[in-house]
Amino acid sequence: MCLTGVDYFSTLGYQPAIAALAAGLLSPFATVVLVLLTLFGALPVYRRVARESFRGEGSIAMLERLLPWWGGKLVVLVLLGFAATDFMITITLSAADATAHAIENPFAPDWFEGQQVIITLVLIAGLSVVFLRGFKEAINIAVVLVAVFLVLNAIVVIVSIGHVFENTVVVDDWWKALTAEHGNPLVMVGIALIAFPKLALGLSGFETGVAVMPQISSGRTKRGAGGTPGVADTPAKPLGRIKGAKRLLTVSAIIMSTFLISSSIVTTLLIPQKDFEAGGPANGRALAYLAHQFLGDGFGTAYDVATIAILWFAGASALAGLLNLVPRYLPRYGMAPHWAGAVRPLVLVFTGIAVLITLVFRANVDAQAGAYATGVLVLITSASVAVTLSALRKKQRAATIGFAVIAVVFLYTTVANIFERPDGVRIAALFIIAIIVVSIVSRVQRSFQLRATSVSLDANAIDFVLTDAEEYDSIRIIANEPDDGSAEEYRQKIREERRDSGIPQRSPVIFLEVYPSDSSDFEEDLLVRGEVLHGFRVLKVTSGNIPNTIAATLLEIRDLTGVVPNIYFEWTEGSPISNMFKFLVTGTGEVAPVTREVLRRAERDRTHRPEVHVS
Image (cartoon, rainbow, N blue to C red):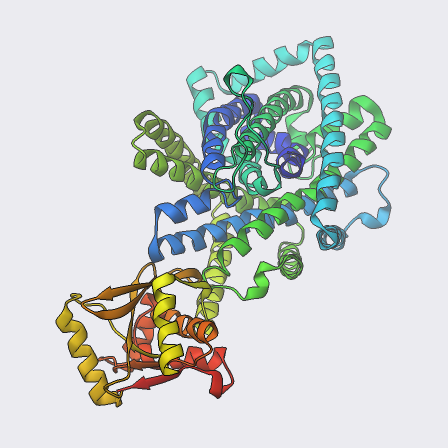
C-alpha cells in the first residue's frame, strides 16, 4: 500500500492548492464530487480489475483479452502510450514539485533560487540509483515515507480544524462570499461538476495499485464453515492475493478521501484566495503554508522535508508500474528487444526519458499537470470500459449497467480535461507515436527470429520421427497447406513432391501442417500433434506465424532424433512484395524462403541445419 501511496498520497502536497485554484470558494464541493467518484466509481472498477487481472497487468491486459488480434494489440500500444505519459510525468512532475517545496522553504539556501532544473535532475538521478540497487530497498523507503507523511498531514489538518472551531467567523465569511459569488445552489453544483476534471490528479494511484499486485504475498483464504482449512492460492487463481489487493485499494481510497475532504475544507477557509494564485505563498503547497503558519517554521520545515521526500519518491510507484508493464507486453509482441525484459537497462532508459522531459519543461509543475491528468483519466476510463465489457460478456446485467454509467462519467471527465488542457494529449501522442514506431521497427527486425518459447511433440509425433530416423536414417517432411483434408489432397500432394523434388518412391514422408491462429502474437508455446489421416502421417501445429513455426519444429525434430530433417515446399503464388507484407501482418506469405532464412539465422552450421527444398 505504501508503494502505491507514494504516488497516491503524495498528491496531498499539491492537490488542495490545485482544487482551490480550479474551483475557488467551491473547492470543498468539487472535492466531494472527486471523493464520491473515487469511492463509488474508481474503487469498484479497480476492485474488479484486481480480480480479473491479478498478475499486475491492470486494465490493459483485460482489454487485450477482450479485443484479440491486431486490434487488441493496437489498443494496448495506445494505452501503453498513455500509461507511459502517466507514469513518466509522475516521475518528473513530482520531482519538480518537490524542488518547488524545497525552494519555497524559509531555511532553503539562497543558491536554490533559479536552480529548479538542476535540483529536479538530481532527485530523478537519486530515484534511479534506488531502483538500480533493488526493489526491496524501494519498498522499505516507501513504508517510512508514507507513514511519516500521513502523520504530519494529520497533525496539520487537526490543528487547522482546531483553528476553524476557535475562529468560526471564517466559516461565516466563506459562506457569505460563496453565496454572493454564486447565489443559486444549482449554479454551485454545476460549477463544482465543471471544475471537477481539473482535480483528477487525486485519482492517480489506482492503476499503480493493481500494478504492484505481484508484490502482494499469496496465502490461504480464510477458514470455511466449521473451521475447515482455507483453500491455498494457485497461480491460476490466487484468491489471497486478490483479497489483499482489494483491501489495499479500499484502505488507500478511504484514507485519501478523508484527507482530501478535510484538507480542502481547512485550506479554503483559512487561506486567502489570492495566495493560491501563481507566485502566491500557497500556490502548489497549501498544507505546507498552514504548517508554517500554525505550527511554526520548525514543524513547517519538517513537513516540507517529508513532502519533498514523498514527492521525490512518488516516482517510485510510477517506475515500478513501468517496470511491470513494459516487459509484459512489448517483448512478447516482438515489439522490443529482449533486453527490455531486464530491470536495470529499463531503469536507465526511463531515467533518460525523465531527464529529457525535465529539460523540455524546465521543471515546471503547471506545464506538466495537463499531461499527467490526461494519462490518469485515460487509464481509469479504459479500466471502466474493460470491466463494463467483461460484465457484458458474462451477462451480468446489473454490473454492466453500473460500470457503463461509471465509464460514461469518466469519459466525460477525460474529454472535458482534454478540451481544457489539450497539451496533455499532445504529450501523450508523442509517447504513443514513439512506442508504435519503435514497435514496428523492432517487429520487422525480429521477424526472422525463432518465436517459439517451447516446442513439444506428442507421443504420436515422436513415434513418427523416431521411426524414420532409426529405420531410414532420414526424415523427409512435406509442408502442406491444409485444404479439405481428403485422401485425394494428400495423394496429389505427395505425387507432386516426389515428381518435382525427386523424393525416392520408397522413402517415407511425413506431412507438416500449420493451422493459423492470432498472427499478432509473437512468442508462443507450440504443441505438435501426430495424426494418421487416410493412411498418411500428419504433424499438426497451431500458430500465428507459419515459417517461424516450421523452422522451430524442424530444429526440435533434429534435436530429438539426432537426424537433420529435409522439408519440401512448393512456391507461393503472388508478388514477392505483397507476400512480404502478408508475412509481417498475417504470418503467412512466402513461406519457403522465410523458413530457410529463419533456419539460417538460428543455425549457423550448415551441416546441422535442416535442408529446405522448393519446387
